[in-house]
Length: 251
Ligand SMILES: Nc1ncnc2c1ncn2[C@@H]1O[C@H](COP(=O)(O)OP(=O)(O)OP(=O)(O)O)[C@@H](O)[C@H]1O
Ligand SMILES: [Mg+2]
Image (cartoon, rainbow, N blue to C red; front, side):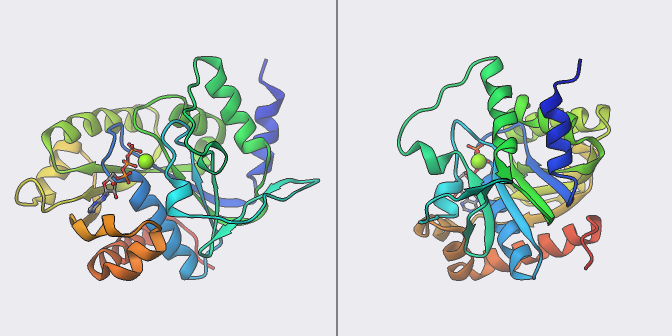
């Protein structure tokens, strides 16, 4: 029998126009930086966006989108706090420096709880920052929210990264997930960037490219990274322009 909590989750997100996953399969390729920057720029352009960090073991949300308020709850659930203009939620706000191991069923239960306790309301888009791998966070979200979910694949232009993302691309096709495109991060770091070659290998369209910007490390929040590293901001603006052509968020 279908878990009744799943129907409630579907209902909870029925007023969200689009749910966009940023995944990779591979770790450390820039999913968090790019998904948070995309959320920030979208909200700057007037879209009602929430950034949800589904990386329970290595959350980044608390650094990229700091919040200094007490979490508030009402009848509809915990309100998503606003950080630098973006509605946000991350387990990182509650963990401090503590490790957070989860095994087996605990992960699914936490995923259900995570969405259940939130007051999501009406939104143009939920941007989901996935952890590395193709585990429950990806499969659960995709199976619960089904055709409402789209995915962006983030990769680096390195052999090891492309090998893993190739597998994700096969999974996306097999599962018929609405595919928005590939973002190649740190393009200038490994070899001469050749998007056509990447498209051929991954069998998917490249949505955008982001260069390696060593200065990004100097700044903690995504707002300060975007404000101080202008070329990074310009590249993310491009990514957002192209994303908006593929996701219908028109006001
Ligand atoms: N274009 C870039 N230029 C320079 N540094 C970058 C760039 N993109 C990401 N980084 C840095 O690389 C590291 C990994 O990025 P990030 O945490 O976004 O990757 P991730 O894919 O989310 O990792 P994980 O798989 O652990 O969730 C971070 O320190 C981030 O600041
Ligand atoms: Mg991450």
